[in-house]
Amino acid sequence: MRLNECLNHASVPTLQRIAKSLHVACVPYSKLDILQSILEAWLDPDARKTMVHRWCADWDAAMRRIVLLPRHAFAREEMASLLAPYGDGAVDRALEAGWLYVHPDPATKFPLIVPEDVCQACHAHYVANWRSKVAMRSDDPPCVLDEEDAILADLETLVAYVRDHDVRLTTTGALYKRNLEQVMQLFKIEESLELPRWRFGYGKRTFAYPDRLALVYDFACDEGLLIEHDGRVEVDDARWHAWKSRLTVVKLRRLLRHYVISYRGPIPRLPDVLRLILRLGDDWLHLDSLYDLCLPFLNPFYYDSMSDVWRTRIVKMLVHLGIARLGSDAPECPPEWFQTTELGQELLSRGDEESTADLIERRPALVVQPNFELVVVSPDPRLEETLAPFVERIPSDGVRAYRVLAHTVAQGVRAGHDFDAWRACVARHALYGIPQNVDRMLVRWAEAARLELEAHDVEPGESWA
Image (cartoon, rainbow, N blue to C red; front, top):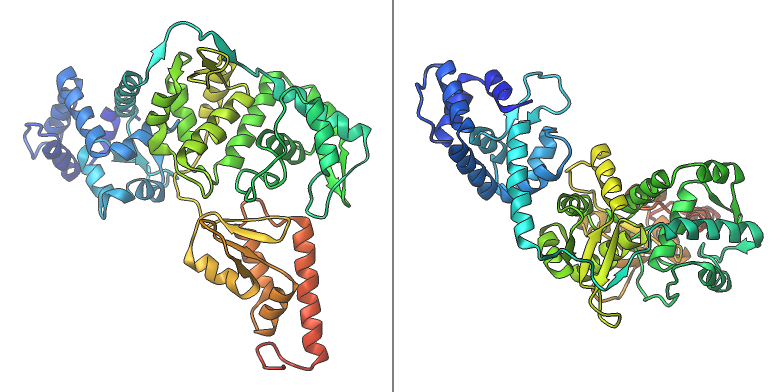
């Protein structure tokens, strides 16, 4: 809906408050005069510029996100979450400010609207501001790193390797190091297999594999191309043949979608970063100034600083996906320039159109690792209080981690805590579910603890030492 339609459906008291907020002179008791006066002010370029500047200044953080979204209608809970930093009654104040309106259909799923022309004007204001803050260059840097669609070739290499070899999994659900080394030697893009102690949050198997391989392997499993069964990895030939028949752009779009889903847990504003990059077009952009521009949408994540998140989790992965390429002024110099590829522009645009991303903050979450460690991704005292009866805390700096073992499960069962409810809670909050080996052992340990209580004829919660 456009502004004139929203104003036409607004009540007289609402129009009066909007006119007062915008300092529009009018006859306050005539709906027609108020409406016409507001529209005349909006159609005046100078007055419209003043309105847009004021809205973008007063509601900056919220307006930045709104203009990046592909839709302009919101549920009340979404808008309340978006405007939460502005204090109590922020939604009502926004309705009086003249940029937010109530949908005329009370039965609609998204009852709050930002008019299309208002959103377009604010969008143009921000894009001009963003482009003025980013250093650009018109020529190509001397050295350019562009992986194009190498990730698809390496996905095919991984599937071919699994088909031609007897690939088995360790007890933690990872490939053996010998297999990893052989796969990495066949890949077009190699990665170091040396991993830090703490690895979690960026996909189901990031604990065991380097970043790019973890993304490829997770994607192959989620697409059903690879199947893990009884400690082995096998290829689903029917799904693989169907996958190979798809167009390259479709394959990369699905990989991009998988990347956003996998990384959005630790980087909640990742879709906003991608939309902002899309708005800047395909010019060569200076990495540091682009980083400064994206800072409002970035956050540290445990062992990753904001700079690590930017360079390793976003820039590097976009290059792997063929979305972007990097440039430097000499072979020995680190990358200084960033450019979205022509294919990257298409993929990001299509993803923007298809996006239905919500604005509601994510629920408290944790990562359950195959080595029986639970890492709390979104710290929440209530969640950790729920975890406590069946786990023990792992001493560590900066990471809220726990371990669940046979004796901790038995301890919780003996104390009378509901193990089944605990297990369901863990599954509900686990970003990537409970690994099969962990879930299988949890059930076995709980059953053993119950049998032990029965053997001693003791009710849960009673002392039986």
